[in-house]
Image 1 (tube, rainbow, N blue to C red):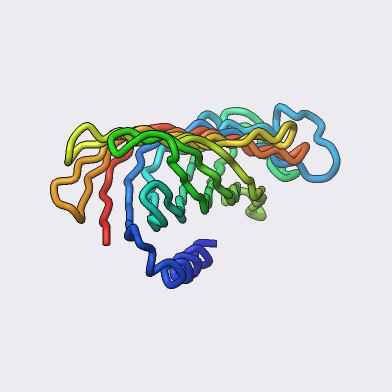
Image 2: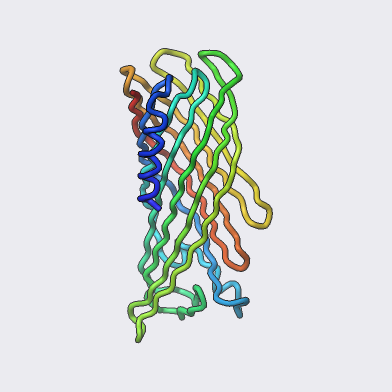
Length: 255
């Protein structure tokens, strides 16, 4: 997946190299606080659904990890832009479980050492059109396609023989939302954006952020803000829920 994202960025760069409004390359360090639950069931049923529903922090000892968000934006007009973005999250845990749990049909009894891993690949391609307002305050719509894959794995190296199970869920989701920019001065601007979709029993996806930009020189912008991603993908009985929220900061280079 991550190789495909790099190839897509290269292809889009070539296709939009002549964008009249310029090109922006952005990189943000995000420090989210993780809340996540997964459920993986082998076969049609599980004897006790509560055993297969795992809190990744409480049950598996996963810790918060920083992530880097990469964005490539093409300004296609004075109020419109196309953006390709990618975010990868990786979490891990290593502890003895305090209760008996199940994952993908495998039971891990109380006291078993479980080494766990969770990864999220999140790519999105969107178009923003801020058709309301003026040069100092703009509001408009965001139409975006999001692709997300969550993969989880549990390993018990102390068992004889050692046990390892893995499962993943993925989805492609069209989303809509709003974006605003307020520019009170030459070097300062405030921005915000929220996109999402509700898919009934299949789940939902919400991604929102608000922040401040400082532009000391025309080609460089310093960025800071707060972001929240709320994701639920359900393929009954399997389930992946993830809520990440926290501050971010980084830079933006404009060409």
